[in-house]
Image 1 (spheres, rainbow, N blue to C red):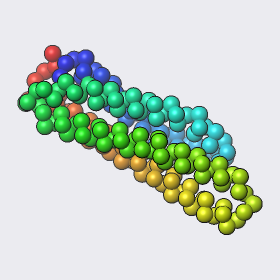
Image 2 (image 1 turned 90 degrees about the vertical axis):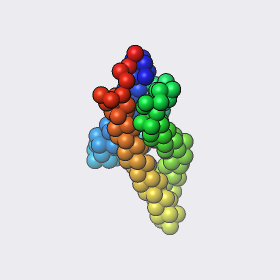
Image 3 (image 1 turned 60 degrees about the vertical axis):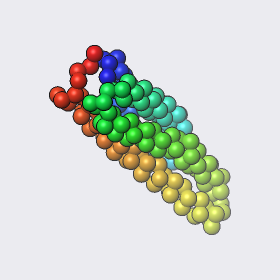
Image 4 (image 1 turned 45 degrees about the vertical axis):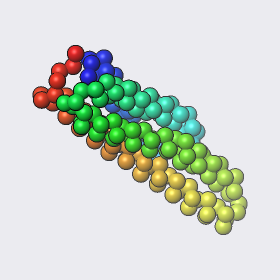
Length: 165
């Protein structure tokens, strides 16, 4: 793994994992405690496109940085492990962005527009809560896969591995 690839990999991991941790433990809980649902929706609509772009960029940087290490047979196993964990995290992250978040936005809009219809409101609320649970669950899964990728990266850089060129 070249020094440039290593820097790209570590930078991608730091950016993506930092964004996920910040979103999970600081941003989401603060918004839920201090904002009304409509203000929370406005903030989510403004922040999440950037959050997902930042995470996807970090994931792509991690994958590009790791490709060069596949040629070295001495570190191929931790490299493949790293690449698979990063790839799975990226797929889950993009699924949340392309499927779950738009579903939540749609349900939130329907929920706000059906304020007078109690039965429909309950059904939409249940679907929204389920989509929100899925988003949070996927966020934790992505975080776990990224920690696993960081551990695999540590094995790539362990004293037995060849030094970056």
